Length: 227
Image: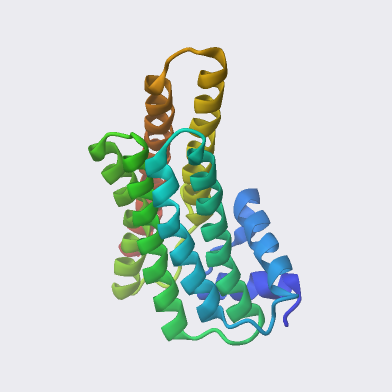
């Protein structure tokens, strides 16, 4: 296994020179994944990838159940994101990274983020807002992929809407809505509306961050493509 610092450098090479030190959230997320990968070094990265997708899909059922089950949905989404980072740590730090695995991992990321959008929708967020959340999860990576095809080899600085931010927003949004539901029952406020507002608010904040992050990335790529 590579050391943590070696892993972060290798991760940067696989992600277009992006420096994880530019974001405490990204660096902390990657460091946590590395810490989990060390005792699990013999686990296949493919297993972690598959588990991450399955856990993300599993989060939809408790999200649809609503109420306190929303907390379970949020926790499952957080776990799926962690498993997704774990597969990368196992592959890169363990010297098993490959272009095929990199592409597969990216595809699974998009599927799990579609699962997050569906979880928001079944939990009560308006369909258009959940769809916008999912699209804004997908758009930055699509832009990076297309820019790479155009010859841009560096993806630029870390934006506010990287993978850890998307996972955190979806997970915390659903957990928060579940907590609102519990408080609503205890205080007899009668507010299914309060839960819907919490879910929709989390999706809306995610969309706002998505727009900001996409603009940040667009400015960086525009400069790179102009050179």
